[in-house]
Amino acid sequence: MAKLNAAAVLPLCVVLAFLAGQSAAGRYYSDPVQNKVRTEVEKAIAYNPSVGPALVRLVFHDCWVNGCDGSVLLDKTPTDGTNTEKKAVQNIGLAGFEVIDTIKQKVGVATSCADILVFAGRDAADILSAGNIFYTLTGGRKDGVSSSASFADANLPAPTFGVDALKNNFAAPGHGFTTEELVVLSGAHSIGVAHLSSYQDRLGADATPIDPDFQAALIKVTPPDLLKKGQNPTVPNNARDASSAFRKDAAYDPVALGVNPKRGVLDNSYYHNNLVNKVLFESDWVLRTDGEAAGKLQEYRDNATAWNLDFIDAMKKLSGLRAQGKTLEIRKNCRLTNQQYYY
Ligand code: HEM
Ligand SMILES: *[C@@H]1O[C@H](CO)[C@@H](O)[C@H](O)[C@H]1NC(C)=O
Image (cartoon, rainbow, N blue to C red):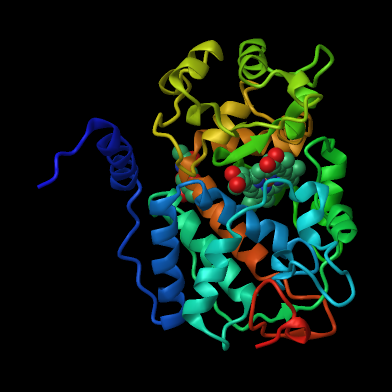
């Protein structure tokens, strides 16, 4: 047997350790299409854990704009050219598109890209939550043929939104989500990463309240003037997921806070973090300033099960938002409308 060197083995151990703790494998569906999606999502996350959060976010960013119609996946359309949703400011950092493409190749022409996207997001949530977040979905969605960057920006919330803007955005026609559901879904920020440009407003002296140690730790790893030099690095959304050095600088002790210290888990840690002002976005922190939302933050901090169950309901509702477009189809390629697809 070839001699294994430590540098090669170490990353493998990290991956195996990650999988061992996050197993929600052995989930089987009666629908063969959903089984194929599941297999590919498991493989993709094992290969690159960062696609897990990306797939969960895709559900929000697709279904929030014109309903769940796969419009976020389009690279170009006959009416929008290449100025599709992917170019929207609020879609910065969106990822996981290759996973959707791979799945599309496996499931074939009968399954819409919109179905694939919500199935994949559901499986990612299941895997990242070690089986605590799981819901059933049915297929039958169809794919839209338009995808506009400006329309996406008009519909998606910004991280600089105040609480009234967030509540209005969630309640808006085509969304129809309550303040409770706003608080529930924001808990998805227990996973994944964000670019400096998305939280730079939290690093100044006049920022909305943020824990000073946490703020200093963020400034240390991502000094805001990097933006002026054309750099836009990322940090984990959750201080739990940062390096030990960052956790120390941020005075973030997961155990003392009542948070499972294991990195990468989709759980209620967001609420523990928010109630000590250690969250990234203004749109996270402002939930503390609304009476109803603040009560929900406390409830979900104190009751992990309540959050799991309510998050399940809200994700199922999100995945059921109906496509709004007049022209719908089942795409052959998730990046192109059928009119633009040549084979
Ligand atoms: C309430 C309004 C929301 C705002 C203002 C918001 C904003 C953001 C922003 C700015 C980022 C970082 C993007 C970047 O800089 O790369 C982000 C990341 C993320 N968001 Fe939200 N979000 C909201 C709601 C949601 C919802 C409802 C979900 C899912 C159910 C969600 C899931 C995620 C995930 C998983 C990430 C990490 C993505 C990754 O690592 O690839 N967010 N969000
Ligand atoms: C936590 O929430 C669950 C689900 O809503 C509920 O059944 C349980 O009674 C709650 N636990 C506490 C201690 O309130």
